[in-house]
Image (cartoon, rainbow, N blue to C red):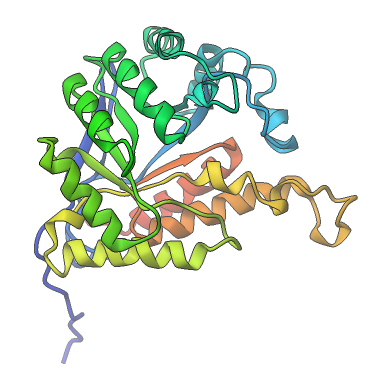
Length: 316
C-alpha cells in the first residue's frame, strides 16, 4: 500500500501584494503554511528589499560601512548601487526625520523621496523613523508625494494608524501595520485599520522583529501563530502577508559589532555578522514572513540561495 501524506485543509489564502510602477514585484499569495508545497499553492517567492536611508547613517557598524560608505551620503546613489547588486526592491527608511537625528521637516523628506522615485525604477517601500508622533507628520506628506508610484508605506502603529492609513489609501499604496509582539494586538490593529476604510488585502503585518539570540524564539512563535490563525483557524483579520524587518534589528547586536580582537573566540567579524543576518532572515521565512528587509549584500545573497533551494521543490 502506497503511503499518502496527510494534508491539512485550509480556509483560504494569503492576499498577494503587488507594488511598483515602472517595475513591479509580487509576494505572498500562498494557500498553505510556509514551505508546505504539498498542501497548497505558492505563486510567488518571498521578496527581499535592500534597505537604504535618506541620510548618512550614524549607527552602521564596520561591516556595513565597508559596503556602503562610498554611497550612503546620497540616497539616489545608494539605491542605484543596490540595483547594481541585483536588488528587486528598495526599502527607504526616513531616519533623518527622527527628532534625535536631524528632525527633518516633512517637505524636506518628501523631496528626497521624490528624487529617489524619479531616479530609480525599482519598487519602493517607504518607512518612517519609527517615532510615532513624527511619523504621523512625515508619512502623510511622503505618501502624497509618491502618489501614483504604488509603494508600500509604513509603519502604522496604534498611536498613528488613522493618519497613516488614510494617507496610504489616498496615495494608492499598500500599508505596513506594526504591533508589539502579540497576536491579539496584530489582529486588533488590522481591525482598526480596516474600520477606517483601508482595504484589508493591502495590509502587511509587521509583528515586530528581532535577531537570533535577542528574543528570536518569541518573535518566531508570534509570526507562526499569526499564520496558523489566518490559514487554519479561519481568522480573516490575521490572513495577511508578513514582513520581517531583519537588518534593522540584527545590526544592533553585539555579535555583528564586536571585533575579533575584542572577542577572539568569536572568529571573523565579517563571517559572523553576515551569517547572523542571513540565519535570522532564513529562519523568519520558515515562520511565515514573505517580505524581508535586509542590509548586507552577502547576507541577501545567502538568503536568496536558501529561497531558491526551497522553492525548487515547488510544483509549478
